[in-house]
Length: 157
Image 1 (cartoon, one colour):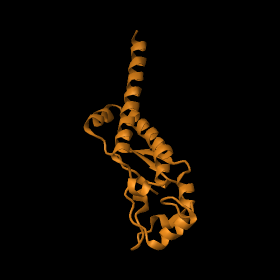
Image 2 (cartoon, one colour):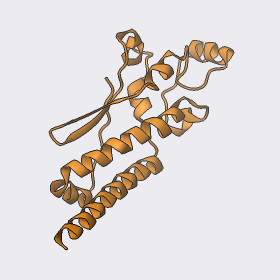
Image 3 (cartoon, one colour):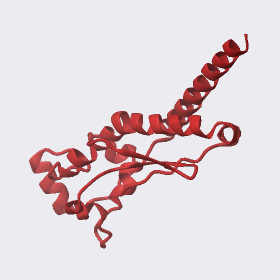
Image 4 (tube, helix red, strand yellow):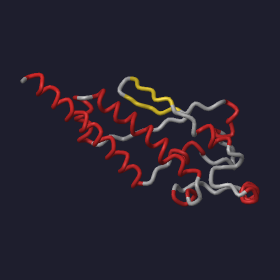
């Protein structure tokens, strides 16, 4: 299981107290958007420097280069499995995106001397992506609040 943590700034915390379900829905949508739009970029060329991946052993790099594979791809199994739909789990004020991957992907979680932290690399985001993610959550939540206010005004009339 790979989970992501979102740090919420102060102005959004106030919204979270008043509208926890709306914020959770917005975060769920943003996680799905990340999975569809940002995560595939971790497997493209240029991702090694963009996300600061750990150095790989020369034997791995040579084999991958010979096969013409991009970063984080050796056989392609990880990319295929991680591209499958995520589960969104909401509980006790938290929202998590969980990858549903088989135990056969144990190498993804290996922590030996020469094994990089692949889950950490997969979840890595640039500052621009973090800002975009945060803005997306704020905008979706604000839109939902505005739509509720419009609905409540109509009921009062």
